[in-house]
Length: 206
Image 1 (cartoon, helix red, strand yellow):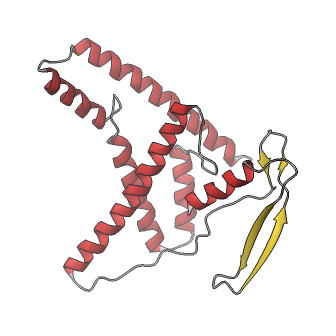
Image 2 (image 1 turned 180 degrees about the vertical axis):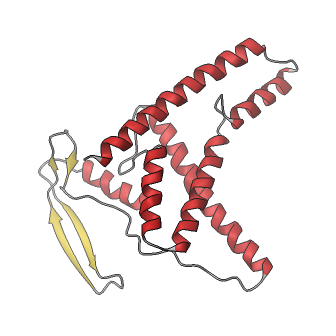
């Protein structure tokens, strides 16, 4: 999973210079054989400690599970949506906390805008795996729902926050103040989207 990848990268980056990291390599999807290697991380040109390899999720396929009844289908669908929503929420809040604390993105993670989403979608569709396409569409929908629910101005969650604030204060918030906050937040979101778009285009031509 992405969390396990982040943990491995964090361990490598926290390894003091001159010391080694032991990695267990599993051969074959059924763990047909394992090998333990010792690697000494080095500081690259960007000043980041690394071992010179790229890590990524070991994705094989997405399986479709047939429900035995309508009730079972609702239960399985609810469980799948809950898992996606909880993972998405955890990632987004971790990202926000990283920015607020000044730590930046967690190890092994990156952000993508619409261009990156389209690129990822094209890769999923090219595999001709209908279950994977459905899972990808569901992930995008859940991501949009979670982001839109954040209590940030210019988003639905922000509008709900204004309503709750007015209810708690017992009076309406000045319309000009609310419009000014929304305009500022929208400008920040547009700049953020532009930054992710530039990053997506740059990654395509690397």
